[in-house]
Length: 178
Image (tube, one colour):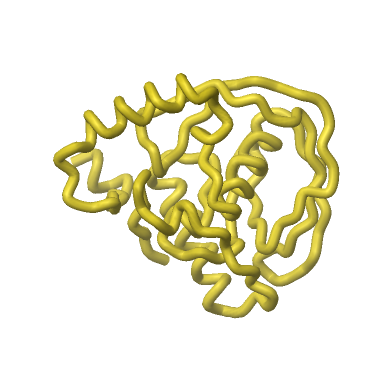
């Protein structure tokens, strides 16, 4: 397994609609393993393939003690409304209150290519929707009011005006503690 670079706000791949995977092979399984390792090192609860530079419908989640893979996910049902603060590994240190369905039912393939159906609420439902949004080229900022989005984007541009690229290297846990 290896750590992957995160693509940050402004990287074109974050706005791409991801292509379906179809068949899960060893390359997809390796990608999933690398994504879990990267997400864990970056202290995230979810990560979509777009965020590591690949516009493929693959995402990983680790929320509420449940760790799972979503390949070619589809939301089948939603219910209720809930507003909570969200952030994103691709937009570090920027947060906003997002309203989403409280409950979702999805269908996806797991890391072995087996189709499954899952119901989720709370943080897990929010993470699922956030990552599926990424696969569709949608960022959590897109769910905010125009004024709030403009304020946060202005802050981002101010804080990142000297950045040379849209990539962020993720450091292994051991490298951060030295």
